[in-house]
Image 1 (cartoon, one colour):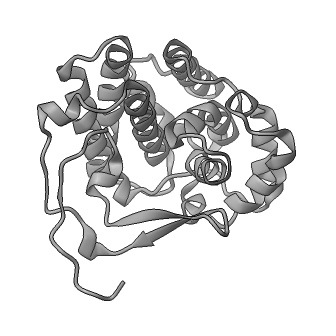
Image 2: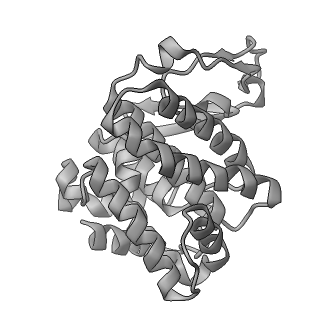
Image 3: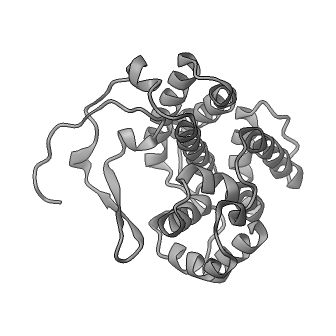
Length: 255
């Protein structure tokens, strides 16, 4: 980690926020854990969005990567950190993904895929200042043990996480509602309106509705919750999580 690093010139094929992150994540097959490594020397020097490569990735991989960016943007907007600069980047991420992801799911046109690439870059930069929250934590824990794509599993749990956080996340929900062109009434109705739009999008994309639909057995939930408590991103959740039982409660509601 202390060694010098080669310049990073990235040509992504999927709308991944990792393109602009100062670090990488690796999977430890022995421990069955995802290990996040931070090194500012690995931050990208340039990102090249090339039409041929933008169109090269399988559609389901593109959809999952875009859902990952969408979740990270939403969690960044509701996190305990943030500023007007990150708000601008993350709110436009939500706009771009909501507008263009359905078009990618229906076809393989270049323009919507390129828009998702730009959304992922915006999200990767903005989320550096905000961190993430419980949906990202559960996505890491489930994905590491049960071979479910990050974006897919985060989309499964995101509505339940929003319900859990609603009372502590209203300022962020205002920003999300604005990004989705929703009227914002405040209180419980705001989280319900955001959840309804997200669930409609996920349904149209064919995202599994529950962890069990993605092959996650019920007996695995305590282990997932325990693993999630050690995830650095949990500190950004708007509602403090003090015990693994709270993570398991959300998992039970989702399962």
